[in-house]
Length: 408
Image (cartoon, rainbow, N blue to C red):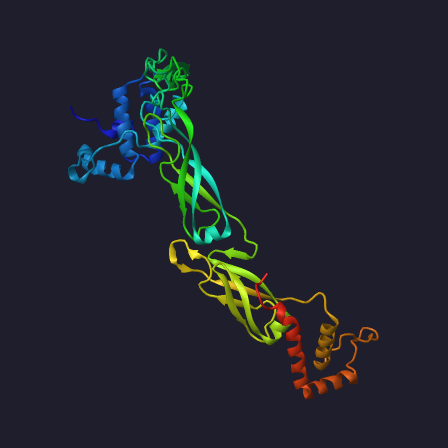
């Protein structure tokens, strides 16, 4: 039997636009659909659907125009295997006229995958830096061991649903201005299962599954940070009807540290230093994630200076052999309480530096002029460099003990 021309099936000209192809298909589909009790024709509808699939696709339409029906079976370099359910417009039509998509509800007799679960894991700062082994408890669904997951009491079993006769779906017919249409719905009595439990299992209350706690050993990789997720395959809820289990996704939350501040793989540390250490320089012990380390402070260091400690930061998550850096932010610490001797030494240093700690009141808005005494002090400073050095050494002796030891 020869096949009808697809343009003839849709009732359009060969130069019809895509909008005209779609409109022609819509007009004919609602009349020929098998669920239309008045004018439905399954054979004609399949022919219409095949014609639309070909002519609505530019590539397939081009092959059909060149080779005809031979192009659909592989002749002339064509294609094989036309899929009647692959185009979206059928879904739109079914949704508008038949109450759903092109796929009717089906009996849920096949296996179903279990649900994925989420677990929030809190880590200490150093645990995230170097990794850790954690034991976590997961509450997930497992098949009931009493009824083997079917929900029925021992000695009984599921029976065929009387409402849908085991089909898992029912059909309802509604009258519209287009005629009578049949809508396929999930059976409300068995929820699409096709079977019902008459005597429920007392252990799982007919659900077929119970929630149990499972202990899991989890290895947290070094370098992980807040917001990262670790996947544990098949540790989630068990699937129904022997379906595969879902997964567990562990979401990481890292606590802040009292000293360290993390930025990716870089660790920042605010380190206070005294005036004598900043002025004279020296050695300072600072904390790192690996323990205490010695750093050198240059003479004349200003507040806000940074010192880079390479490879003392966080390991790279995808390359454990590499690590970030630690950045030391030096901050000048001003003493709050001074002894009488400390005050005298600082005043002496100010005098040798030509610094006037108290200024005379200036007349009007003009700044106070430099006094002859200040000029003399500056001149004296150049001549007493040795004395100034001695004063700084004494200050270092007084404040030096505050520079040594662990950084706060």
